[in-house]
Length: 264
Image (cartoon, rainbow, N blue to C red; front, side, top):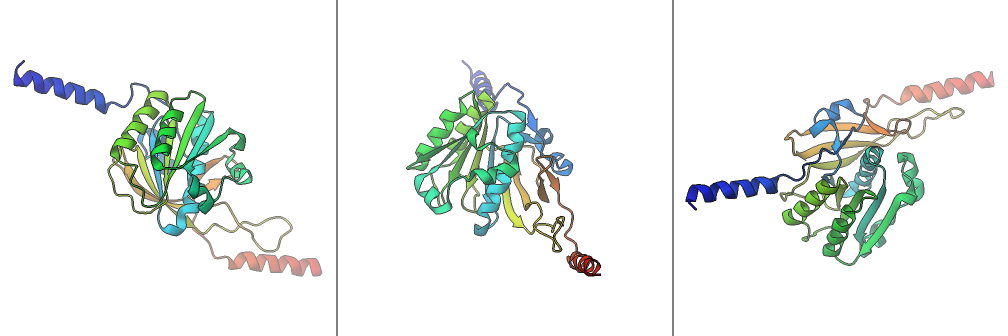
């Protein structure tokens, strides 16, 4: 075999390896048109690997909240169970899933199977095995801080297994810095944002509105990146771009005027 033929054969094999799948799995629109326009295919790809990390150490809870919203959008396209995998000690540090906290995202807590593992390698193995289960819609793995077990090879294995079976893989990182190259479809940095006050009937003062996040699309297979502030729409169970926060003084004035009318 000539050197040209050997090179051609190597290129063919590498090309086959680069193709994660021959399937065209559905795309889950986030609900925010400006955000979906940047994402490959117009939304979050199912049957793919997505990575989420907190913008700062205090944003871990915000990252989980946004991730649950993204999970709700994935389940709307591919209904099924969710396998949640994390190191055993991390549950003691961060707490366990709270069913009442899943309800605002429209997620049934009975769909969750929680797996606690002693090491990151065990967690990655559990994620791979769950990705091959046809009853599973998505798998979620939470990486501990300063983890060294998750690298390009591990991400490639997850991405290929997800693409083959159409199950979506989420990796949640506990640390903001995550500069390694991986085979992820998208990588997000999430920060908490103040919510917009919401007026409630019978209350003079406005209360908490829907949760908000500042998103940075750090990496995308399509190559596009960007920044958005989004909030969760409890009625449509989707994201929407957040309107700028207005001065809260009119809400207090309106409440005071209402009390004056009632007293009169």
